[in-house]
Image (cartoon, rainbow, N blue to C red):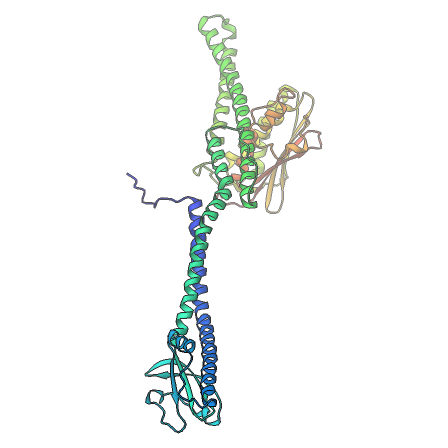
Length: 462
């Protein structure tokens, strides 16, 4: 029993929405991590500037009291409230007075020259911002603000940033879902079309839409559907032609068998009838064998038995057989071979099968009084078997499909003598199995020229 442990699949829409959301969150987190130090630095600069302005205002207010001979006049209420709200601690140090001990960690040296002091320091171990101003009477006003106030500014900025991010996600997720649905609509249509095609429908056509890659899927499915229509049509025609070819010898065998059983054949014709039945049975056996070979050629266990073979002698032996078949029907047959033997590594049975199928095809289309040539051509590393005839020949567009089952039958039935196409299909596939190639052209004799080229040395089937 097979157990499926695969996790449940999610839809493409869900994945797109999740992916875009995760990417948005990651980008926001990275932006936050990068922007936090910048925001904190900006907040500190802003806090330092605000503290400096407040120090200036405080010093100016205290100096106005000194100018009016009212040194003890309190600070305006607004300044006091501001200092309190911003957690600012103020120190007023009279001229010549001792510096409070809590300010020991802050260097007030620049104030000796009457300059303002704007710096950072520590009070009781905590980082602070420091602003100090020298008054007209030599006193000093010092304002101190904790760093945490500036940090709170940065945190508030990040909080606002996070709120904006959440609001953006709330808006982006529905938009992403809508866009994803629109994006996968052509894919959904392609899936439905593929399901219909798998169910046997062949009138399925898709309108290419969406991005280029998705539109290409629709075009590919349309092309696949057209190819299936063509292939299934060829298969039907091929089966019809095979059925016709099988029915002919079967009808003959059945008819003669019934005639023999009924005793309607004279005794003098019984032997000739037996010969006819045997010939038709041989023809039937050849068709069935070719069909089986054609089906098995796609399997990995199709037998090829490679041997060292004198190909010249094999062609000469085949030529003798086919001359005996051509002479009774008035077809002139010639065998052309090199003078010397030609030894190659090949399967002699399959090579002879290639020759016989080519000759069968040539003899079928060659009229009485015309010519057929069986030629063996030797080269340095290859040898070729060529069969030429004086038949009607083939068109240039036939060359690419000549070795496909049933294609030439479909094109030329009712026009010329045609077979099922099994023979030429076997030639194409057997030649590839033997490491060679097959092609067709025009013969000098006026008909078709089938040329099959093989390597001389071959030790294994690829």
